[in-house]
Length: 214
Image (cartoon, rainbow, N blue to C red; front, side, top):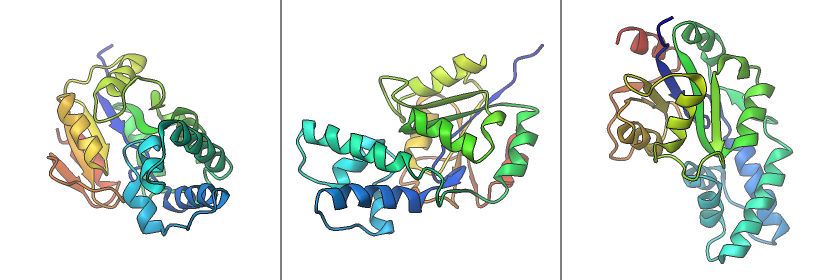
């Protein structure tokens, strides 16, 4: 059988709107430490480069050991509410099975690997993905291509000719570093910055036309 082409999705801001649960978890850590709460907008501006960078931005000035402790606290606080307020974006649930007929679908996120799988399962879409790779599975995070290569090897695809779909500059940079097509999700809560996108979509369902026309 011919090899299926690959589509690699980001998670937060691409498949799911997780802003409220992330903010609540960060603020619980801050409360435990007697620190001032952050707004949703502040927390969202810190998201996209992995948990360690998130906590470094939320609590400036921590040494490495205390930053590691803060990350453990964040993992525990977040694990209690992965999908308390988190929802799939419109059109995701009905579009994924249509894409899965023609493509190997993967999720590559800088979020903790266990949380990635749990969220997809709780939102009843895990079955559509041939591979999921979260933070901790590789030595490096996006924008390094290492986690993308791992996802491709798991599902038996190559990255050549494939797509990266995400809402953040790290996703677009990862696509560039892996020589893949890049689709930017303008409806998400990340930023494009100066990174190139081959296509920009305003809602998830537009992806069908994008990938089937290439």
